[in-house]
Length: 265
Image (cartoon, rainbow, N blue to C red):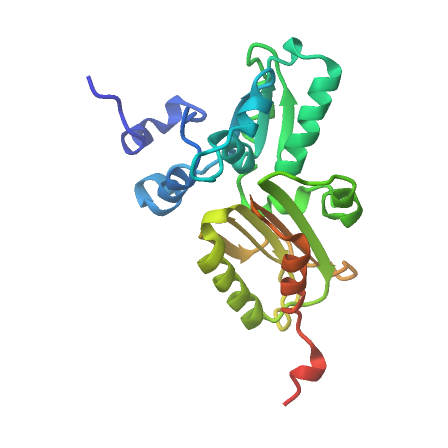
């Protein structure tokens, strides 16, 4: 007997609270994300709550070190990079020093994911479900320290995949920023696993804009709350991907700032 698909389950929506999509062996969830967001039968009835990665603490280091013959990013690195939550399982099988080193490494690859320690894969459901981690507004809740340059300088990053947080004050020029993002996605979409942003645009009043993306699939729109009267207009960006240059990205983004003297008619 065939199993019901998401479209068929929609008519039984009152019978369940959530659906877990288990994707063992699938390094890139982008096709699932794309389908969920663009297929009306799915997007009208479901939303993606979180992307959760289950990692074996005992063997994860070896999997992260795996070299692919073609030089591409291995599955373990990609799964960590895409995650909103990382379940670090079998923590009872390693010592404190090994666990700390692994957690430091995970934060280098994806410092924006929440790492949850588990034994025998047991985790309170409220820590991984019903949190709406996969949404455009999530960047508003990140620890401000994630965007500090000093914290990045402390780690000599040799990872093929890494996470970069950028912040700076000012209003962006909408046209310049759109051109930058189009060029970036055209040239680097395959290397960019996750992107997020909090934006202030010149000429848009108090409207606060947010976006998030998986590869070239970007969702963009106004935030639920506007900029407060005395709130600092600080733009924030998150990039998680392959061979990222934090200084280059920062310089390119700051070129998108609206400059009064260059735009006087």
